[in-house]
Image (cartoon, rainbow, N blue to C red; front, side, top):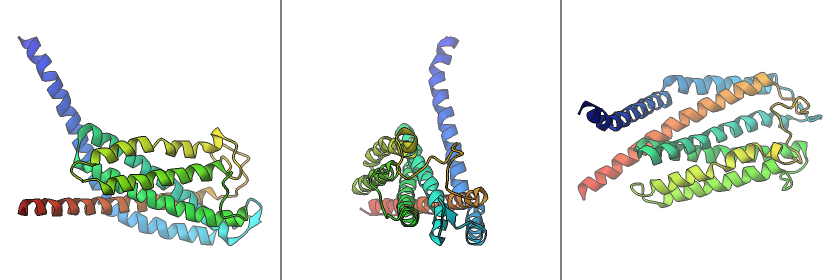
Length: 254
């Protein structure tokens, strides 16, 4: 009798433990995205980034001296943050499909919006920088450019799916899209290793890379962009929460 009772209680205990862990993670994410540290970190590291880029960073890259080369620091940092945001969309979508928590849907959609925004700015800055070092705004023969553009289109589609479906029933479709679409992100970032690049060189683990990028300035800029992303993510989640309350009030009045 005791053994049978323990076996019956075991699944319930496991479900409680999983729900407890997910609840704790949700609480931590709420505190992080609404923390004053994130807000002030965005400001301080942002100012420091501008000071280092315009004050100490070299304007010479790939053997070309031009002020437009300074765009590389924000281009790389925003590309990193765009990938992180789309990774957050993937994670939020997976957790929503598993636990159906409304918070995970808000997290996935908010990160998807910011990821699309940062990817757009990455493409714009990269195009301007490419004009300086390659004398071309765009090159269809470069695998990194083409695959990143595919990522941009994929997540434009994610936003369309998310905005065109009912929030009460359509979040599942957006979550499935967010999980499947994420496969394009690692492919884009590994493209210079999977195929022969035309212009983009493999920078990580490549001692022969010819772009003279100062690591300290780049690191500070990446940290600044990360703080900015987390801060904007918290704001967007709060907007989603307000929208849900408004919809709830509308339903209660009907």
